[in-house]
Amino acid sequence: MDKINFFPDNLDVQNKRIILRLDLNVPIKNKIIEDYTRIDLCLPFVRKLIEKKAKIIIISHLGRPKANKDSSLSLMPIFKYIKKTLETNVYFFVGNFDDEVKDKFSHLKEGEVILIENIRYFKEEIDDDESFSKKLGSLGDIYINDAFSCSHRKQASIHKITKYVNVSYAGPLLKREVDAINLVIKNKKEPVTCIIGGSKISTKINVIKSLLEKINNLIIVGAMANNFLVYKNLKVGKSLVENNTKKIIEKIYKKAKENNCEIIIPEDCRVGTSFDGEGKIKNFDTIHDNEIILDIGSNTINKIKEKIDQSNTVLWNGPAGYFENRNFSHGTISIAESISKKTLDGSLISVLGGGDTIAAISKSKNKLSFSHLSTAGGAFLEYLEGKDLPGLSVLK
Image (cartoon, rainbow, N blue to C red; front, side, top):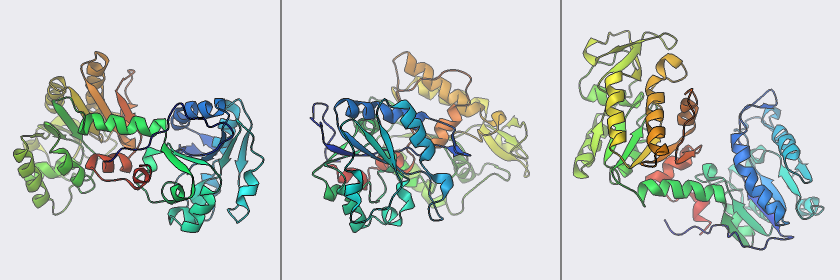
């Protein structure tokens, strides 16, 4: 991937109108924010721009509104939090993007902030509409994309807006994401172990194929592993299994062999007859037809820990089991604690990605540390795959 144009710290932005694309897509229930992490990660750079006396126009989305301007997906709770947190004037724009939209932002003074209401309320955003992009671009002198998690989407505030501003940059959070993933796929410190979990192999097949050329060990966990177990003629009971994966898995093993990459799949598992039970550890030859594999077993956990101990770099995407039930979160938490311990002693570079992975490790009672935690889902996987993300390609 060509070099991305990152925001230079020494750039004079006083009195400049900055369009700042952020990802403030946080969980909100009954108009109350349940997790402030994404917002709090964004605010240091906003404060920096305030100190530099820029005029800041923030664009973000929340969820995927289907009905026109679904009030449950309003950014109002986020606006209230930002207004309370930042020591400056913060305004909320809820108007339309007509031909006079630029005039509606003319009152903004140096060091002040406007947050635009959920940009996905406008269909033109999703469509990457040319006219809408031009109106958005007219609001600012400089555009900064600090929303890596949205950068795989061709949407107006991520993509075509860059045609209508003088200069475009990637922000510091985006840079941190790209640098972290590059530690795994470009500037890697071997041996590199990749742990891939989740439910479907079909959604991650291209990432797996791409990674096999770059890593030393591939560990398959979660429901995705069921397909590999079936391929090996092992019993999986009534566990989730995808159809027509035999040829895909054959290609994965063939490519792994060509690249001298070891593939590790579970040796034992924790099963239950439903998702809300306690479960018990079993070998695959003793699984009954009415049982579901819901976590990895103790032998598998020990094997994964051993591989982590032998590694200098670990990439992890996707939980090892049905972590929503604590009884089936043991495998995921054990992996997380093992990675964290080695990261803390300075002998491991660890990059974790995906919302489910981060939600799963939050189940641990211990404080965990990793080199980088990415909340990006699709963008994380597509960048790993080597795709040129639309939101990054326009920042070069």
